[in-house]
Length: 290
Image (tube, rainbow, N blue to C red):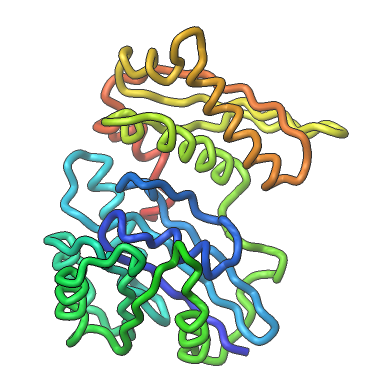
């Protein structure tokens, strides 16, 4: 049996989570058009008849702008170690300093690298050439794909064939090693990213406080944390319209995840400048850095 860990690394907004979801054949990692959506390391576990691939989805590697960004960078860099293969993902539509920064981090590692130029459906010819130039001396192989269009079969086949013989690390019915509360918080946070603009998505976190299972219903109580009073008003919306919309969209995805009816109660709490609060950040990211 082939098995191993495959870290999916790259700058923000290159489509790392979309690639993981495409190869998994289901949504495990949250996605949005906005950079910086992924904050934590997430293991997505694909079990096939003759292989088990553990995809390690990571935050985008970039120069941090605040304390939370420092935490995310540490998580992304620590996730590079101990893998059997690294997928270095670049965007066919935009290549810049962050991609060069990632390349500089990766060239110090003694781990095989596959280069993946994603978003070929919106490719810019000059950007593709820049991506190829960055990858030519670094990557063992280069793949040009559109994960959004599901063009990942050839890449997945090569990943599996390149992995070593090994054990089944996880039971075959497990698709992620993250607890349910984390997955629920990620779904809610994804809806905040989808429905809000400017600094709001980056100034929010979600705390799932309680999950209660009843015979035909799961009750979930969660709090959306914001950094300013003005942000609380935006998340709530006029007459509570925004938070209801966030809750409705999140509940549908949570019901799909759990395959049962869900009651979702959302509240908003202001914690002044929490993205620079080391105590709160330790609570959110502490387990990632141990």
